[in-house]
Length: 73
Image (cartoon, rainbow, N blue to C red; front, top):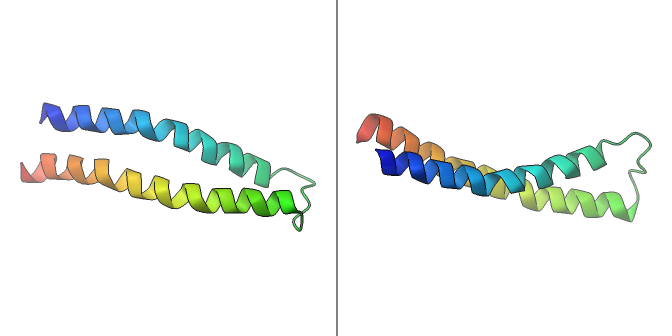
C-alpha cells in the first residue's frame, strides 16, 4: 500500500507543471479585450486542446491506483 501512495506522489509531481501550463493558457484566453479571431487566440486554443486531454488521462491513473489499493488490495 505504501508503494501505491509513493506512486501517487510521483504522479502528482509530474502533473503539477502541466496544471500550471493549462492555468496560464486559461488566463491568457480569458484576458479582457482578447481578439477572439486572432491567430494568437487560435494558437492558445490549440495548445489548450492538447494539454487538457493529457491532464485528464494522467489524473485517471493515480485515481485508479488509489481506488484499487483502497478497495481491492
